[in-house]
Amino acid sequence: MKNVVVSNWSLVFAFLLVLVSIGISVKEKLGLTKDILISVVRAIIQLVIIGYILKVIFNVNTFWLTFVSTLVIIFNASWNANGRDPNTNRKLWNSIIAEAVGTYITLAVLLLSGVIKPIPMQVIPITGMIAGNEMVAIGLCYKSLNESFHDLRQPVLERLALGSDIKTASMPIIRRSIKTAMQPTIDSAKTVGLVNLPGMMSGLIFAGVNPIYAIKYQIMVTFMLLSATSLGAIISVYLAYKNYFNDQMQLML
Image 1 (cartoon, one colour):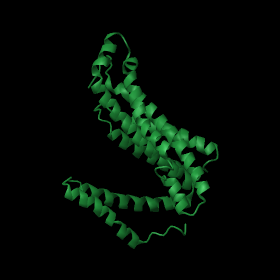
Image 2 (cartoon, rainbow, N blue to C red):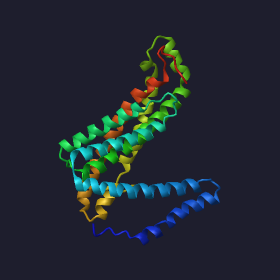
Image 3 (cartoon, rainbow, N blue to C red):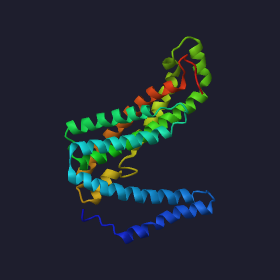
Image 4 (tube, one colour):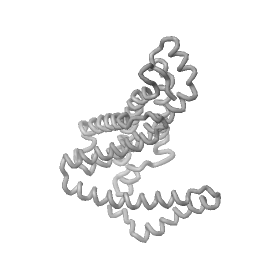
């Protein structure tokens, strides 16, 4: 890690990049200056706090503390994903189940295959990457569901009137939502290494790791995220579409 040296003064000068965003907001009268400043302050505070917490967790190195950390990550990701659901009848448990199943299945495969070791220094960051990408996918899924039910309300009502159950009536919307949720991860996988050097790969290279080893880890991350976002999307959509219907199979918008 001797290759990575970020002094406090370096961070101060890097803050000039934030001023670029603020300048654009002011010049174009976007009204985002307050949001930018709040987001920067929150990011600094959150990262400093989590840095000290992770230091303690890594030093203690116990299974239960690591497991609790993954639960906290999953809950926060679920909370944020649920908040992106425009449906007033949304249920937090839908997001929690989707996040937990997708994250733990992916983690289990990585641990059993020996790709990562069952230590907090590896499990916690990987959990954060998985849950974070799932959060985005689930949020997109919810948004697509809501928009599609409003746009395709009439076809859904017609299928219900012809005797279809709510699943059959909603199937085109379900498929569209899953596809929408998965598409960003698929697009990212198509351009990885050509358009951008992702976070894990860049971090390892910064730390002085052989680029070939860094690439192997990034390939693992690509596979991991494809799996996690797929699981998160399909589980969340099959749980959430039911929230648009009442017990009498009536569409509630």
